[in-house]
Image 1: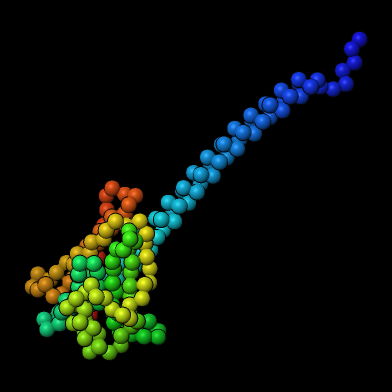
Image 2: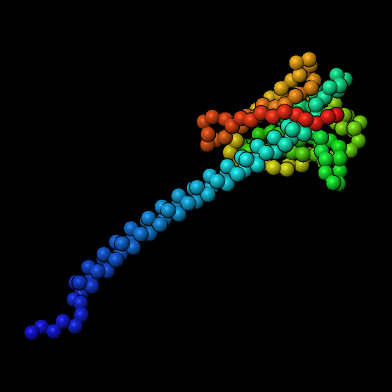
Length: 193
């Protein structure tokens, strides 16, 4: 009678080979799951950044100054590179006007803002200077937000039927690198000068 006290060397090697194959298959499956997870998280972050930029655009539009005075330049100024909006600004610390600029540089949509301007004549002077050459920009404007992976932006004002000096709202279009169709939004201006 044969005494079986353990496994043979061949049985042990076959078991280790099977465990190795199972481990390799498991690691490949987990690696794929982690790649999918990372991809989904990246897409979620990208969509959240787009939503934040669209909220900035919406807020800027809603606070954009309606210019009923024919003597003043329009409060939406478009150059070859920059689009500038004059908006009403109100907070606990300051009340007045602010200039907001949008441009696309290196496939990144950038939003620039100036500090609040409390004096109306100063704001009107800046508006007049900016309307002469909007692409020179404003030295006081600081980068406040940027959105990567943007091919182009288009901000078109809705003009009053009486004049092209008072924008009543905006049509906004963002072309993302990852989307075939641009994202569009419209808004109505409510601020006053």
